[in-house]
Length: 249
Image 1 (cartoon, rainbow, N blue to C red):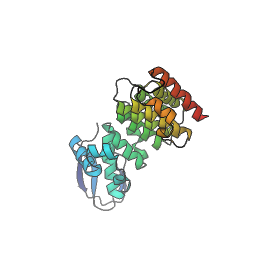
Image 2: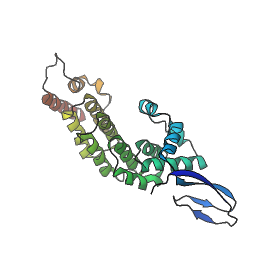
Image 3: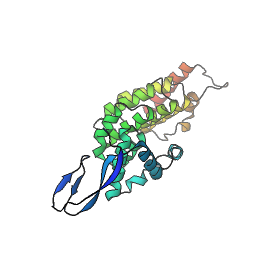
Image 4: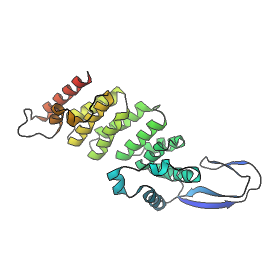
């Protein structure tokens, strides 16, 4: 069972030896010391720590996760942050996954892989991206499939699909490229089409990568207007893909 509250234990250990704690941390017991053991962390504990570390949910959503709050840590402070973030991952918090990836915390990979199996939407995207980064793209094709699932899931909110489309910029496989092209051609939401286009341009190394700088394509992915020559949605999608493939060449 995942731990649920942080408690501090005062342990007097006079003999010099190494002790491995349950979560894998190795400590030297030569001197009496205070050990912060990950015993039990409640959801309330985690939420309070996350808010004090990164800010409230609105600012995280609006400004992005300020990962510098944890990447700058060292020693006991870093260890404490890692323990809290692993608790977050165990509860499928995508922000925790992003922070651990930014810290380069490869020890979290096992927990990330476990969490991925039951994560959904934006959290699934963030966890898959963290695994891809921390494993040095060892699981790249598998993680790409996770993002494709989110991008093409009919029941998910468009914001999760945007995150999936943007997340695919760091992948290179043919399958996710084809998924982005399908989104460009047939996705109902303008912003999903927009970010799918830009992800393709980034992957292909086309500059500028801002789709608004390619007006012929941009005018096809935005919502239809009275003055547009092509008004049929399916035809607009096919023409967009054709123009994108021309840029790729």
